[in-house]
Structures are given as structure tokens and as C-alpha cells.
Image 1 (tube, rainbow, N blue to C red):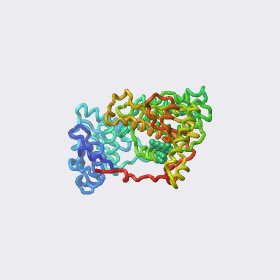
Image 2 (cartoon, rainbow, N blue to C red):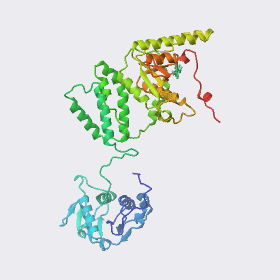
Image 3 (cartoon, helix red, strand yellow):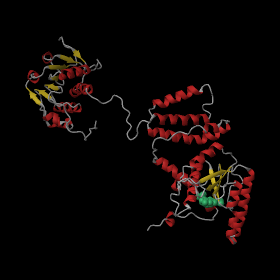
Image 4 (tube, rainbow, N blue to C red):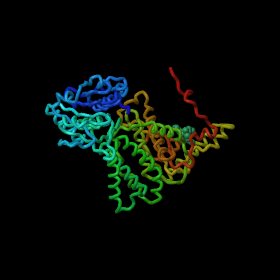
Length: 490
Ligand SMILES: Cc1cc2nc3c(=O)[nH]c(=O)nc-3n(C[C@H](O)[C@H](O)[C@H](O)COP(=O)(O)O)c2cc1C
């Protein structure tokens, strides 16, 4: 297997008596010696002794088989017999595949690893004997050892090759001192979500599940909620996963809102529940950016509405989002008047008719004909109508940013309209902006304080048709301009 971390210092071996010495007794093949060296270095062992090897440790086939662990081969030592090889050791373990008629402690590699560590900690030099490939250790070699190590394997077939045997013992040795956690959740760039983020997610999910009717059986609700929380708790959610789930739930909620209303669920009450707090920094990944582009493309000015009503809670949510818009000096000059009263609506509509007739009079010929054919407002059907004003001189912001450009106040209100527009579209609602109006008439119809400037009158509702291109382009009034026509570089 490949997988060496080349950033780690080479060779990472433990020597100088702080680790067991591996002794191969009369090994036959250079390849096996090489593979033993590889197995040893995998487990940070470097002290290899050979008793009367048939082929030398530095043989080219041994070096090739060691796969880069040549340091172990280069440092290995040869001995004429087992006695000489273990002469400086205080405790010796013999590895065997079959029981011998000798009274000795027999242990597994795992138990042997603990024994080796304990003796090394007590200052002893320890070694492990491995026999020749075909025959294993002979009884004389085993008799020199203090204990025997047997690998518990299939009794009907327990033959291991030399390097495998060395690897099993070396592996247990390494594991017994290894500090790597037995279980670890690898998070990469994200981190486990804090409990408040997780609880916000639960609140979001539970609110939407209630809206879609999933939690409608009152007496089952508490246990269902507890089970769901347990499920998500087991997932050990990361910050990123919490954000993804918020996004998923919000997407699914679009569809469920309509169904909830049909089921007679109290959407307004649930919507009024505290909104989830967004405490962690969001990650706007490429799929989000993709969606955002789609939102811009499909925003469009909508003038043809279906009769499907829009809930008051949905309108409140849009208005709250609009208030997140930028404003000069943070003066937040936008003022929204939700116009429900039919008489006031009629007055606004009359103002549109008058202004539109005046506008038509300003055109002649084909352009006048085309203008007359255009649908320039959704005032006749839009279920929600909002007049947006700007307070031209609000106390907020203490005049910051509007000394030389007082109109920055009105621009700020326009930014709020744009925010509302996008928020509406993202929720499947359409918005049409109407400016063909007499501002004083609309201000009077809305009974707003003197001096407030009308920014726009907004028609909002579910669109009757969806388009990616402007209605005025489709009608042949005005094409869209390519960006290079409006971008100047100096
Ligand atoms: C400040 C402003 C005022 C607008 N007033 C009207 C209007 O009175 N009637 C209308 O039909 N569209 C109005 N529109 C919508 C534009 O006609 C529309 O944005 C434009 O044709 C581009 O289409 P799109 O919004 O679908 O991209 C207005 C848009 C803005 C930004």
C-alpha cells in the first residue's frame, strides 16, 4: 500500500534499546528479509539481526523488496548463531506456529507487546525470534527464549510468511504505544456546530414541520420532536451541515407553505415564532452563487398576478428583510405603507389612470400605439400593495453622507425596494414597481406626514406567469443593454 507521509522525517525508527530487536533465524530468501525490513519500518522499528542468513540483507532483491526501508537493512547485523544474536538481551520472545513440549508462558502478540513495553520501561533489552521460512524455529532456538508468542489464527491454516509474522508482532507493539485516537471525526475546514446553532436549526425544522402538517397530531408531537432531535444529535452536525440543512428546510418550506394554508394550519402564528438566529458566519458556496444568479435573472417586474392570497405573515417577513437594506449613514429612511383599504387603493389606481393617460399623450405615432398596448401596472389584481416613501430628513444617521448628496436618502429607500423585490422572488412571489403615479395623490391616499417622498408603489402577489426576460423587451419597447455599453473605464 502506498501512503507514506513524505513530510515526516525519514527514517522514523526507534532504536537504542527503546524498542524490541527483531531477530530472523536462518532466513532463506533475500526478498523476505526486505519485506521484514519494510514491515518493521512501518511500525517504527529499526533494530534487525540476522542469524546465519542464506542471502545477505544488502542483497539487491532484499533492497527492492524493502520498498524504501533500506535503512533497516543497512543497519542490520549478522550473527553466526542464535546464542550470539541474543547475547546482550535480557528477555527473549520466540514466535511459533505450533505448540512445543516446553514449559513456557505462551502469549498473543497483543499481550506480548505489553510485556515487551513493560520490560523496556524497566530498562531491559528485549528481542523477538522468528524462524526460517519453511520450518520455523527449531526446539533449540525456542529453548533459548523466555516466552513464546503464538498468533491466534485459523487452526486449520495458520501458516504465515515471515514478513507477515514480523508485521503482526510489530503492529501490536506499535499500537500499544500509539496515541492516535481510536475514533475521530475528521472535519477538515469546518467545526462541530455549537449547541445554539443546532437548537436554532431544530426550531427552524420543527416550525416548518408544523407548517406542513407533519406534526399535526398533538399528542404524538412531543415524542416525534424528541426523536427527530435525537436523530440529528447522533449526526454530530458541523457548522457547514447546519447551514446546508437551514437552506434545505427553507427551500422545502416554499412548497409546504401553500399546502399548510389549504390544510387550515395557523401559518401566521407559527411564522410569528422567533426566527432562527444566524450566529455563525455563512458560507456562500458555488451552488448558492448559482442560485443567486438565477434569482437575479428571474426577478422581473411582475404585473400579472394570480388571485391566490398572500399571508400577512409573509408580507411582514418581506418587510423585515427589506429593512436589512443599506442606507446612507444608516439612517434607514424607508417608510412602508401597506395599503389594504379598498377606497385608498381605488384612489391610487385613479391616479395611475390619470398619469398613464398623460404619459400616452406625450407619445405619437407607432410609439403611442405601442405604449397604449402595454400593461404598466398590476394594480387591478395584486393582493398586496405597498407604498414606499422616504423620510427626506430623518434624525437617524445624524446627516452622515448626505451633506453634498441629500438625494442619497431616497437612494437608500430604493435599495430597500430592491431588497424586498429579491426577497419576494426568492419566496415565489412577484413584485411590480409602479411610478406612473401622481406622488401627492398617493401621499394623500396614504395619509403620510408632509414631506415624505414617494419612492414607488409596489404590487405583490403570486405571478400568473414566469419570465426570465423583461416584459418591455417582449413587447418590443426596449431591449436590454449589454454590460459593456454601461461600463466605462478611465
Ligand atoms: C423606479 C422604477 C419604476 C418603475 N415603474 C414602472 C411602472 O410604473 N410601470 C411598469 O409597468 N413598470 C415599472 N417599472 C418596471 C420596469 O418597467 C422594469 O423594471 C423594466 O422594464 C425592466 O424589466 P424587469 O424588471 O423585468 O427586468 C419600474 C421600475 C423601476 C426600477
